[in-house]
View 1 (cartoon, rainbow, N blue to C red):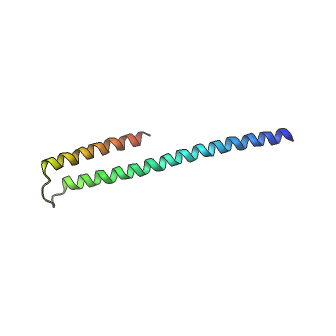
View 2 (view 1 turned 180 degrees about the horizontal axis):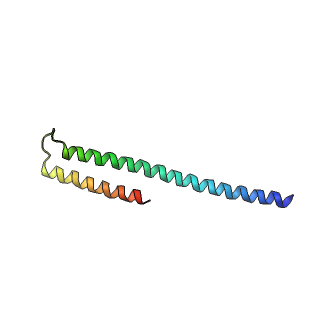
View 3 (view 1 turned 120 degrees about the vertical axis):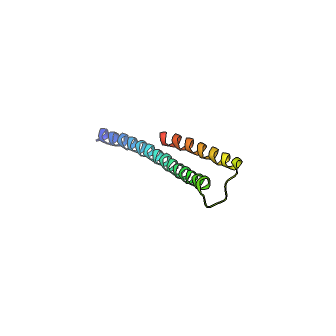
Length: 83
């Protein structure tokens, strides 16, 4: 009987460690998902600003800033998707 209880206790420990690992992975996944959504919104915003013909032409200096932000966001998105 003692052996059965010891074995059950070990199984419970392994299960707890497994659950903690899965919880940590889910937290990382949710964090990455939020960052991916933020990147997508930023890319959408940049594309609208640069490509929208209804607003006055964007100055070349501002367009460079927007395109740099767009490029940085795309790089960040690729890095997040690699995880």
